[in-house]
Each structure stands twice: as C-alpha cells, then as structure tokens.
Image 1 (tube, rainbow, N blue to C red):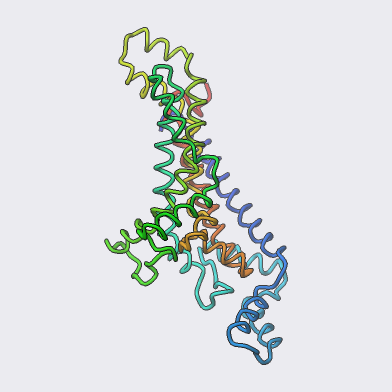
Image 2: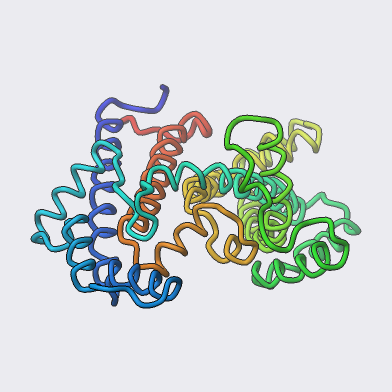
Length: 336
C-alpha cells in the first residue's frame, strides 16, 4: 500500500501484540486486588437462596482447588496466559459450569447490535452538524438552529435512558420496561433474532446517540474552523468549484481525519458494551456481563470480557494506522 513500509508494518504488528500482552497482564492483576473471594461469594449466594449449607469450609476448599486459586501466583499467571493463546477463557466462577467463551458469545451480538448502530448514527449526524456549524457558507438560519440539536449533550445518557423508559415503556408502552424479551429466542442469524435485537436496542441506542452526538459535532466544528484558511481551500475557491464539492471533498475530507481515529477507538471499545446503559435497560450485552462479573468477583469473566475489549481496540487502532495513507495521501511512513 502506498505510504507504508515493510519495517513500519512489522513494528506496528509487534506493538499490537505487546499491547495485548501488557493489557492481559494488567487485567490478571487488578481483579485479584479486589476485596472478597469469588468462591466465598458464590457460597454466600447459594446460602441466600437455599438457606444453611453444611460443610461450607470443605466446599470452599474443594472449589478453590477446582479453579486452581490456591496455586502459586506464577503458576496461575502462566496457565492464564496459556489459555489466552488458545482463546480458552476458562470457566466462569459465578456461572459454573458455563464457560466464559459461551457467555461472551451469547452477549456480543446484543452489544454489537446496540452500539454499532448508536456509534455510526451519532458519528454521521454529529460530524454533519459540526461541519455545517464550522462552514463559513452555511446559511445563518441553519447555523442558528443547529446548536439546538445538541441540547441533550450535557445530560448523562443514563438520565436520558430513564426519561425514555418513562415515556416509551411506561407511557406509550411501545417497549418492554423489564429489558430484552429475546432471552428465549434461539441465537443465530435468523430474521426474528435480528429484529428482536434491533427492537430492544432502539431505546438505549437513542439515549447514547442523543448524549454522544454533541462530542462529535464540537470536535468536527473545531477542525472545520482550523482548516478554513488552508491553501487548498483558497485554491479550490479560486478555481470556481461548486460549494458542495469544496465542502465535502476539500474541507470535510481533511477535517475529519482526527474524527476517524476517534471512531476507530470507539468501534474497538464497542465489544465492552456500555455498562450503565445495559444495566439500566437490563440489556443482555457484554457491558451487563462485565457488571455481573464485577459484582460477583468473577475473575475469569472479568478477564475474558476485558481481554476481548483489548484485542478489539488494539486491532482497530492497528487497522486505522495502516489505512491512514489511503485516507489521506499526504500521510506517508516512507523515509524521504
């Protein structure tokens, strides 16, 4: 690809794997610094549901041996890294005998359906509004109206979520207030499953779009103003090109590069879900799964969800870094 060198690609791929290793090591250490013991928490939940349980100490010791929690820290770490190399995320401590791979596989379609839709809509709408706000030739009436579309930006999305639940779930009864109704629908690329994911993702997606659209708009507006006096814009105007072409091909195309980088990071973090939104809407995505892992001190579940997030984000950054010369021909990694 033009603008890339073999050495640069090798270095970036090496940095990609180094980032994953460092991230995986950190997420191995942090959950173990949390107070509480996952096996004791599991026994406590069982006692709360079934009453008194005999021989709890023996049960706890047996489960700790089963999950290898009494092994030396280095042994646990090496076993953990070996599992990651084969993408074996082990058993969930709080949902045994379910495996973390299975739990994440069930929740990722919900999160992708929700946040991919919300991120793309907020990115397109926010950048279009910001570009029009920063473009000198935008009609004054439109410039006066556009800022009102960013009214909800200062409101936290979980507050918007509660407002939307009150209006559309309890008021109009268009949606279920108790979360997703698709837990009983078999997962797969079926029309019923896809439409159910979309339907139950509308309210949380709308809350995220309203709250995040302003950030994209303000960033794009600043970039449009910064690039307003560039030589290539003055030359395009001097050549008598149509305003629409100057706006899209010259101004927006050059101003949007930092936004594309931010979009790559956002798309990479999509797999982690939005914990507060998914918890508020009882949405069965990876954000809600991560919340359950934190509440239950489920080391393996926390590590699995965050590891998938690290891999996705690192890959998104690597991809956008390698695609930059294609997006903007001025960018090159070749030595001059």
